[in-house]
Image (cartoon, rainbow, N blue to C red; front, top):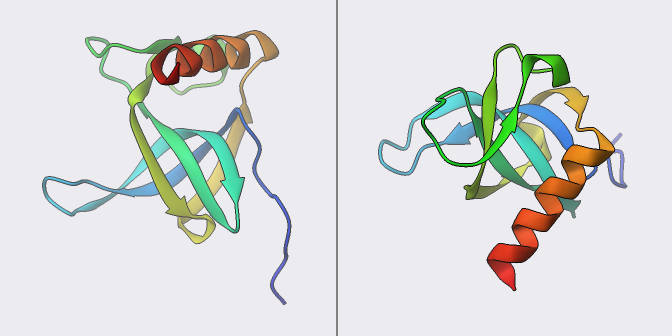
Length: 106
């Protein structure tokens, strides 16, 4: 039976399959949920590359290693592509993400 309704919320960190645009290869990567609607999730990628620009996300906050939330890499996936939910961002970190998104869209 299909479960309807929101399963993921803003700030949830998920492990999901992401299709890379340059190779079309599917890889499992972490991402931050921006919103979910109609079983589609809009998310921002997370990278462990410390040289990337973005919002730092540390081991203390729940990552396996220090990482960066990349707000310049936003994508939409089906909720079926989510492998699992890892943790949720703190209220403070959610506010930082919101503020940075507003800067980009304002």
